[in-house]
Length: 327
Image (spheres, rainbow, N blue to C red):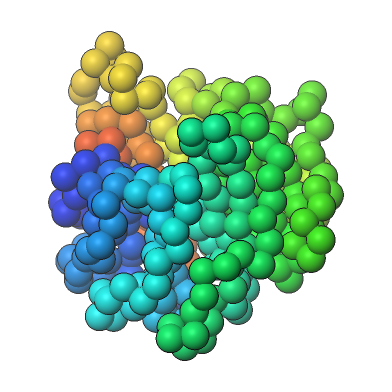
């Protein structure tokens, strides 16, 4: 399995996202310029220029026409995927962190960081079919969690929003009323910042990764803890195979602590776990720094990882991978 090395970012990667067809891969980094690549051969298709700070997160509409990005420049932008044109800018009073389109792409959730005395917040925006009709007002603003909200995603039928972040608590919010419906049990929950959150393809469960060196699998409706995957280093990124019962965890130390560890490739590997048995089944080495982003192609036949080293590595699985015995 020879990875394709995709060099297009000058700064550490922050997020990776495939479109629903699995033919495009979008990457975000701290270098202000989200980039789109062909997911097959890793060829760079184009960039989205306009942000003025690190881009933390992105999402692409189901029909691959719209891209939304959240940035440290205190804005979230809507883009035309094909032309790279900016369609709209949502401005905030603090950095935008997580973005996620709802099912049907008529709504988007955007989280903003605590900043200059402002608390963190979750904003729900209506996304107009015609960019000319787009407005910046929020349909709903949720406040409450302390510290940064690193991820917010839509729950089943867009009835809920699931959020997680610095205070290590996973919360489920009602999108109609804005009420907090559930918080995970402190006993079984993460002990440190939740860095990442990935939903299963069918939307029935989700995976959270945390700096407490573990990842946890939750039921999306009841917030019951299903599985816990324990690793040796902080988890910055998680992904779930849409095809097999595999979860992938990526991580490493904080950028500030990197110089204190072994620099040889392989210290920073993407670790594969059996989703059911919770056992490690393999690893993919290669990055020269912590892995900050992971994404599975919707067809389950390839995955990509983005590192602190500024590279995106695209891995097409060998036939042997699909023969790994699973129960």
